[in-house]
Image (tube, rainbow, N blue to C red; front, side, top):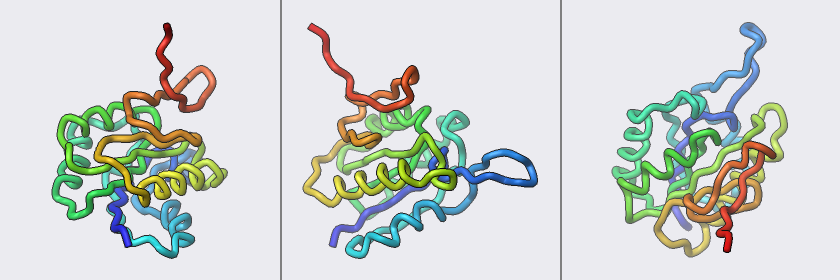
Length: 168
């Protein structure tokens, strides 16, 4: 059974409504992730909860913390739950630091706590990909698409992730 490290950094995926403050917050737990993982009966994994931020608030120190955790990890397959706004920046940073692991970043544009379909789909698809014979590299998995991080982008005009296409 493959052993996967799941790094939960927060992001919209995890946000929950705080009725006292009247706003969505990134909690310091992995309830959303764990609710999905309970249906993965044949998966060996370890969850590390770090950072607990919206990705727009991520700093270089946060990316260093993610990279340090991955480098120290005994697992070769890593899944990172990340906010979608800067998922590409973290992927690019990790590419400069780690070459000998398969790293897949995913997230959600709608919080699991509001509508669990997107988060569930993205996480499940990501784990399915990692459970196959994947090559080392940095990937993004969103909206039914998995590819090398440089080939995927967030189309902010229509609110979905797409594959970059070459013209000509």
